[in-house]
Length: 80
Length: 234
Image 1: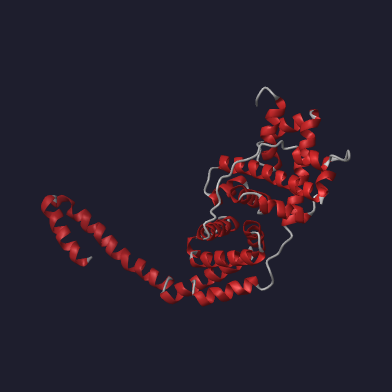
Image 2: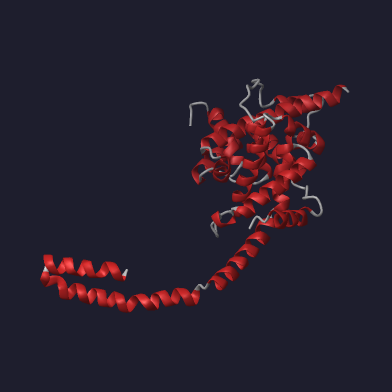
């Protein structure tokens, strides 16, 4: 981690939100977030944004009949 | 095989007569072992049985693959930006997947395998229309730009700020992010793939996934800020 603790947290924030950090890195950023309101605000903001993206884009379902159309096309194209 | 055995034995006999007995014994053992082994293959794997097993494997694969239709469609929708294009892309991906289903190794990540095919189909289509995703330069705005813009008129908690963003604002802003960055955001945030899976799907190192993801999310925030600014003035 660099001398600036916020720069270090910046580096870890994204993988932290994506749950891609090692246990020791998680401890390091969580410790920083409890002490630094600037970074914690950013964390809360980023986390909320990600959830909002998920809830906006993860509700859609394939149009009705798509699976059947795939089966049909596959039989016609003889893609076995 | 029978033809090649005799000259071989003759040669061994000429060069090292002492070894002949051992060699002959070995060959005898082989001779006894071969036919049953061959027989087993015939018993266990007649063409009809093979075909039946393959049909079962194929049917299983097809059901498993099709169970990912919603997931693939969501990714396709964010890559292409329109429902008809997304459906075409999903159909094309499934046709390709079914054609090459034998290359899928059971027990490996089918969702990632399918997403790889979908993404390749998307790239091929984009190439055809000569709008291949390219790297684009970035305006360097602060990551807090969107936050500042949303929070400018009230002191509200950060998560409440984000909840002001409508679903359509997010969908439209995501569409404004250049494809090379958007696809990583789509795979990780919407497809819920890990960095490693996204790296495999995109065929790039994990570090590239992380840097594109970072830039992609930053571009998304910029697009959202622009979008909400437009809403505010309009």
